[in-house]
Length: 70
Image 1 (cartoon, rainbow, N blue to C red):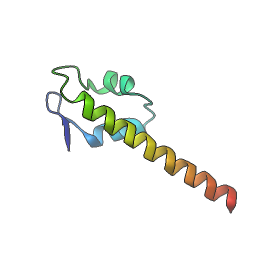
Image 2 (cartoon, rainbow, N blue to C red):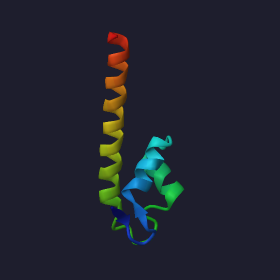
Image 3 (cartoon, one colour):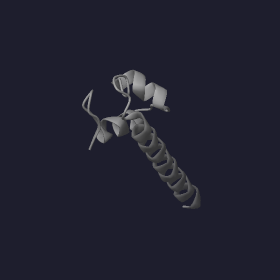
């Protein structure tokens, strides 16, 4: 889904940045140019980043718990 119309940034681009090690909106903004034109995408992008990071953290915790249990 297109998140930033001005720069053509999709949710996949943002997720790729997070899975590549980006840890904040600022890092993703610097890397992709997210929110650097009109700024209409920043609110949604911040929510998407937060949700994706939470899901990644939960997934990591589940994997660690499984490894410790087994």
